Length: 366
Image (cartoon, rainbow, N blue to C red; front, side, top):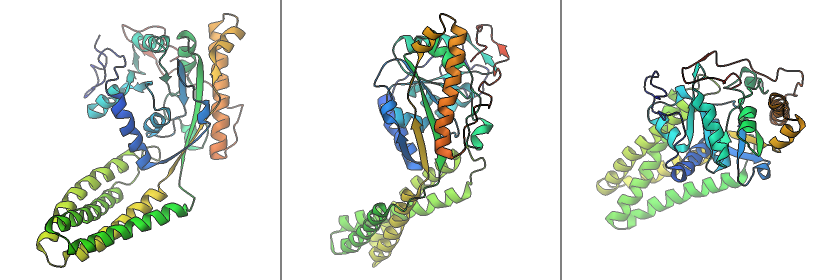
């Protein structure tokens, strides 16, 4: 088997299964990446199970959902991901983080088999039950769900399904404490750089390099942010990544320039002090005002309760579990967006998979 052989640039697992290698390293980095873009606020964290085989089912309003969810869970979780996103360096990082591919056009039986293997091994699984970013998400609602999450939970013997609603919004709070801390940091950088002029050469170079790095990182990062506006509301990743790349380049160039100027240009310390202090203040304000990722973790749905109530009818258990999952996600989403949940809205999405590969079969409800 060579999963992904027909996709140019595919770098995910060739066998279609998850192979986490550097989770303990990548999870903190992913959390830092997500926290740099969004202030993550979680309600219902106590509803996250401590351990065991559970299926986490987030809504999917944004490309940024995987790093946000990873930040919330902060544990070894295997993720079902669209095979066409697992390309290049990103594909390798996803694989090493525990993601495994699902090809929604030419599905392989290994996908469902691996879901069962993961759960039967007592490892949590994350599936986005909307099957992608639904149009309803733009209106603040939950879209119709695929049955795959419930089917995997039932067939894999999961203990529960955990509904997780996500919503992104601008920061609307003043946050005076962070304002004060940012101002103090800016003053500190300014004063330290000015005082370094009375110190030795190494002190002046270090202070100049730091102030130069702050100025260069801020200015070039902002330039790249402004040059890469968000084209699609659900995908802010290109703008954010361009800003990070620009800040890194600007920081290095600014640091080299600042250190050199402090060493050889008389009076440069004062210019660098002003630039460094101003840039520190602007960075602190950007951090304070970044958007908020609102998250509600709803009470888990116990899978065995549905299996027992269905009296051995697996299809009924999957159906009822999916209906209640939609209602739980819908109610949580309504609290986040203010858009009332419509219980008459469609709860099931049509088949995503229309064809099955030679290895496939039995994937109608993915």
